[in-house]
Length: 83
Image 1 (cartoon, rainbow, N blue to C red):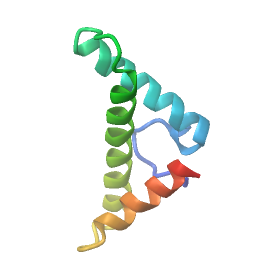
Image 2 (tube, rainbow, N blue to C red):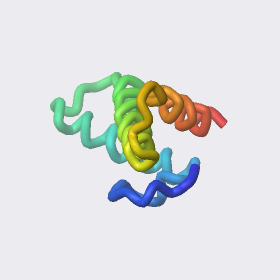
Image 3 (cartoon, rainbow, N blue to C red):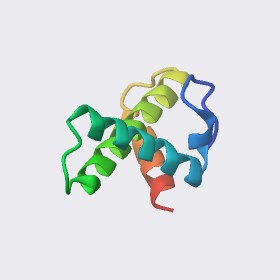
């Protein structure tokens, strides 16, 4: 994944870094909601979705916010994540 020049951590540009960023966010979400048992996968997916959406938005903005192309940036990040 290419750097975006944004304030989000640069380590999320690698697969390992992305996993770490999502893990940390999932933990914060879990703590915020009172540390419920048995919902680790739910928090992981929520954190991943939030993180990728933020990255896609930043990339879209940096490209000049091209009208009608928002989904392109989302798909690019999702494709990176599943590789």
